[in-house]
Length: 379
Ligand code: AMP
Image (cartoon, rainbow, N blue to C red):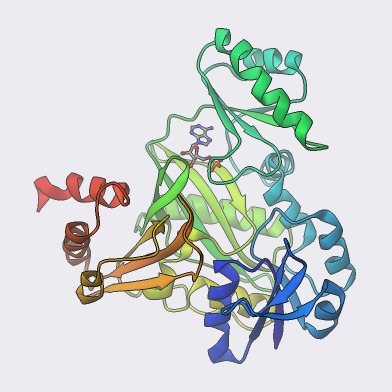
């Protein structure tokens, strides 16, 4: 099987690593340059999309901000999965919100803003405080504003207006501020026959809007709520592949924050912690193969490596730590790799995270240090 992935980042890379044992080959389409590249070496193996589409058995995507003309060509080939509709919903908060409402998935009340008058109407309709997010192109907390008092509207409007005007069809989605206790996500796969296999929920800690730490958790009541919303969103899209739903946990009730129609950063822990990792399950689904078990093998956490291309060698000596570099050039804040930490039982995982915090600094790994600080009284 030959799978063409739209996007040539770490997700395509990890799909290639997971696909090799199944004889599934991956080519990556670098949307920026228009080149076809090897997903591990990034060496150019071809130019232009049309040839690559012909050679591929299946086409999929590793991100949702893909120009629509590219999606159209891929859709016309009849080989694209999950679907253009799913990718567009992941890349446009207006479509995403409408999809969630249609699928009866609880989410924060919202209002679409195109003009200064709309901003006032949003304040009247959904109240303050609110979070304002660009409808297109926003990810990892980028393109967002917070509004606590109506008097601040005058101050932030020029920035919002510039954002709207910079991109055709751009708008701002105002959302009720959700006083959540924590953020969790459900990553799962849906096969061509409609069968579903989901992983245990992950609890996610974001720093400045970027995922820093994910831990697989065992919470049957939350898992059931999450699964029900996952199933209805996936069924509504007739989805094939791995899909991630990010939630706010508000006193035991889940509200969907956003969806990602692809393998997801909060599912990287599955490489060491689950029977079949999310990358393999995505490939299985889009290639029409049976899904693999999503069973938790060992308690596992994932720590993102942001803006660093080096780790103390001591990390490699800590039992249960697995390093995954993405082979990217160092840039401030950039996702450069991650560390999966596994153990036989939860207390051992906590101890291993404490050992890791001794060799990783608090400035680069704040979520790890917060986690360890919170544990101290119990250890
Ligand atoms: P997003 O890009 O939508 O995932 O937002 C980035 C982060 O901002 C989320 O992970 C939350 O921590 C926070 N956030 C987003 N939307 C809301 C909301 N409606 N209420 C409170 N916090 C939010």
